[in-house]
Each structure stands twice: as C-alpha cells, then as structure tokens.
Length: 214
Image (cartoon, rainbow, N blue to C red; front, side, top):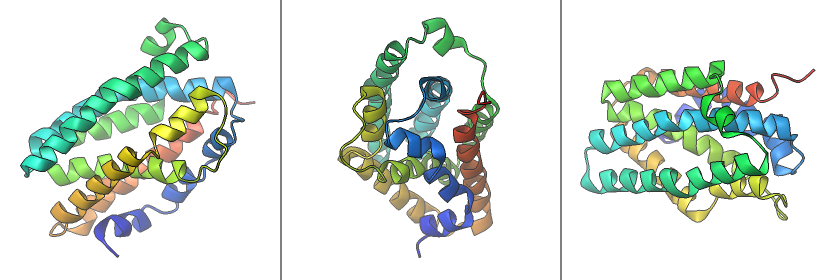
C-alpha cells in the first residue's frame, strides 16, 4: 500500500463519509434542492481564492521543473473553465452577485482556508501536497460514482464532469505520485495529521449545505 492509500485509510471514516455523503447522492441523481446546492456552491466559490494561493505555493515549493509546470497549468484551469462554471451556475440558480461574492464564510470553509493558509505559509511541498490531494482526490472519488445518464441540468452535470474528466484524473494521479515521492521519507504522523484534518473538514463542508434544513 503506497503512502497516499495509507493516508486515505488513516482518514477513515471521514473519507468514505464524504465520498458517500447524501449531498453527493442527491447531486449524482440530479435531485439536490436548489437552496442546498446554492449554499454549497457559494461556500466553494469563497474557498477558491485561497485554493489559487495554495496552487501558487505548490509552484514555488515544488522541487522539480516539470512538477512546477503541471501545477502552473492547473492554475489556468481554475481561473478558466472552473471559474466560468461558478458564474454560469450562480446565474442559473438566480443567486445575486452580492450574495456569491460576500456571503459570510461557514465554519468548514473557514477551517479549510485556515489549513490552506497554514500549508502556504509553511513552504513545505509535502504539506501543500497533502491538502491538495485531499481536496482533489476525494472529489474524484465521489465523481467517479456517477453513472450514465448524468443529470440533465448543466449546473449538476458539469460539476460532476469537472471532477471526473480525463484531465482531472491525470491531475489527481500526478498529485498522488508527487506526494508518494516527496513524502516517502517523512514521518507518517506529520502527513497523516493534516490529511485527517482536511478529510474531516470535507465531511463538515457537505454537512453545511443542509444547515438550514428543518
């Protein structure tokens, strides 16, 4: 079992609880309520600026020129097709700009931003990779649960496709390979602690989407 798989096992039951969350079930079925999905998307968008910083930190901290280029290319994806997805989805869900730009940060959003900022400030490539791997690999795993036909509404379907298309699969594979490489000589606990913390936050992030449910 390689390092990434050992870390994923250490993050149970939080990892599987996220991958199989009712939010994911409802999204894959195209049955998620608009208010639930809107709450989630707004918080995910508010998270993006810090994620851009995290990718930038990976560019700076990577110890290999090809790895730096791969991280840099992913920045263009985040600034391009993914950003466009958010704008189009906010319009489809009738969410005003003041709301998606300025809504208060939910607790799990704040927690993940704090973890990303800690990783950025550390300049520790392995730590940065741990946070990236959780954020991206966990999403790939839930998106790969999708079955044809995909949901008909673009805001549902496109969020799934963004996280299981071939380029995203290659990106996650690269991140895991990098973490396996640079983390091989690290003490396991120094990597498992932030990996578990990030996995716990991901579960709370999906929970948060239902916060106004009665």
